[in-house]
Image (cartoon, rainbow, N blue to C red; front, side, top):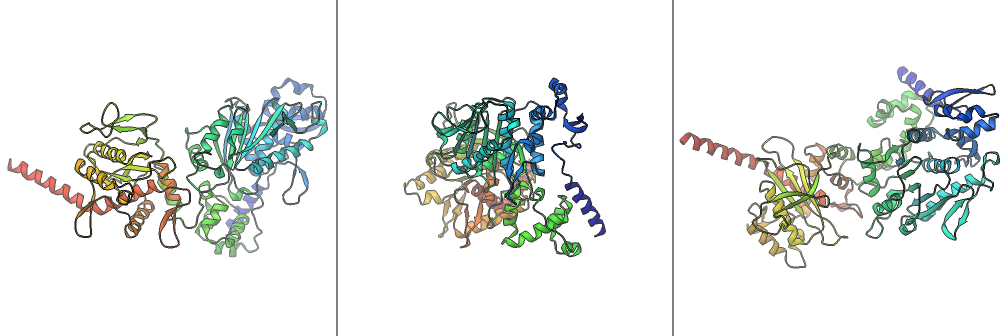
Length: 621
């Protein structure tokens, strides 16, 4: 405990280091000392190259020049905000997380890079505030006619963010405003959503994700996209389409800025996918930024009895000390805060230590998030996109053709690995709807690795909407392409089909594809397809939980991991995807791995007998 207390004192001393933005941060390697009027300031090194520096005759002259190079100094000198705790108007002095974000943005700006950011927000540190004030710095100090957009999930949130900008202009120091007209927003061309800063000629437009047309035809250089995880996602309101319409007009040049930020709202949505893409090097133009709860200054409590606190901590809370460098005061706050939550997962979702915890949105999740994230490690390869076809025209329903993979950027089949000679595969089909708004149909390919003693591995997947007879033909072609794989079709949809052709499709498959999985019926007859019911589904999910927990198979598709995170246990004992989410990819994994596990021993025995027969035939010869 003595060593812990000494280390805790060192950590608290490091946190107490709060540089004065007026004199400058002497510990910042990008700054250099500069003496003026008997005082020493630590100014950005790039400012030394400005010839106007030698012409500064007063503190005011030096300050106005320094505004162009020193964002934290401009913020504390020219911006007044309302303190959330005291409700008093105070100069905007960057806190610890804000200083870290500003340093990241400034490094990109000094390098001449376009500014592109995706930020996973936590509570009470002012991330949205920092972004909007950085926008104001660019528009007021650096660029005229530099228009900006504020888009949130609802228009009221966008208006609230712009209101922050309005207060900034209303309180801007007169001695530092260089335009002839006073700083304020004025209406622009009778447009209800757009205001202009006279003198700077910078327009600021607000809109919501529900009104995407307001963004079209506008000339923006800055875009603040707020609470993206809550943007409506439907055939008529699509976040990807809105992002494309906004950002396509923003040139990739210095001082352009696209900031996408949100609190988390579960996994698998547009924001989560964009966050995961940004966290994979080389896959996104945006820099990911996350602030853990312990970096926020108000999240700490006084510790009266350190030994009693330490003895009361569980393994996770002690890892906050050993793995994350938290102080005892921060851990005490976390330990006490947990008492207000029904379970630890809810606490982690609200106050995440690492980014992955922020996306844990339900306490009824079937799969442990840590297990899913380990599984996600195999999803780094994008795979090759195309289709499995039987002719030059790509007609999978044409009989007699030799299946081959045809690369195409528009293809719906992703191939992570080619078929291996001698490899044994399971091709599993989950049947969805035919229209765009319905569930997806999925055809997944599992390499069983029975000949290599390796882990089962997802090596291919088709996902889309298609007529069911064409889906059957496509599944048959993919099965033939992968060494005449065992073809397993989830039979519920076709057996209960109101269209009446489910039986016909199964019979066609049974006659045309010799390796179709069949199950035993009540009277002993062989029925094609795997039927998912209350009994079999429980077995499927239990088996899949074990595979995910033990890391016993290799996943390649990020969508599968998203669906695992969105899968819930229901109060009646059943299972289902969260509202608005899918489980079609998940079910192909569950069925494939269940059949792999249940037939693995028999397959190994069959191969052994074949090997023995071959040896006997050789001996006879």
